Image (cartoon, rainbow, N blue to C red; front, side, top):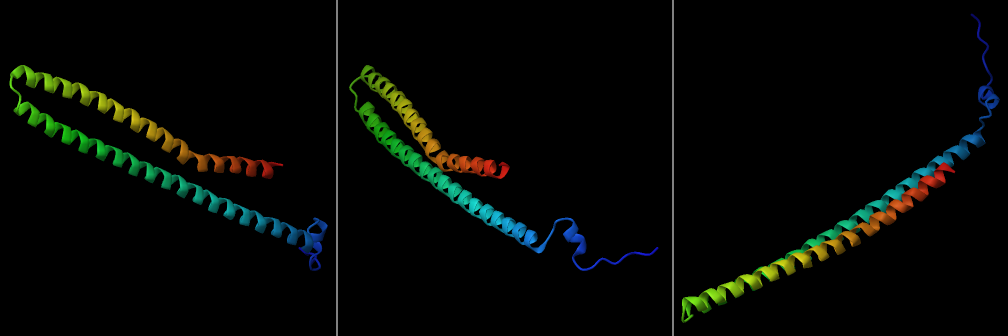
Length: 145
């Protein structure tokens, strides 16, 4: 079997592939990689901003709960002293009943406060990620075009 040896570059040129086409394709590829790297850098920054917001949210919730526990402890000690110094059993029961009612209302208030706090944290933490997702969709649309 005899094979014909092609001249240098002859096969590629018949396919429409030239050094200029290769150069243009390589530049597009390199630019795409740079765009991809920049996009992921921005995504990492958005994730870090979101994580920072969540961490601050935990700090705020812990502060609120610690303050609540401290107040409840102080009120419980005051109730114990008042109950111990009450003049009758009826007075002691009334003090404890009022304390239980107030404690329930405060607990419910704390739950409401924490729910509002976490809703705000979730909304704030999702903003950078939502923005990033929108940018991703736009980027995909430009590659589809």
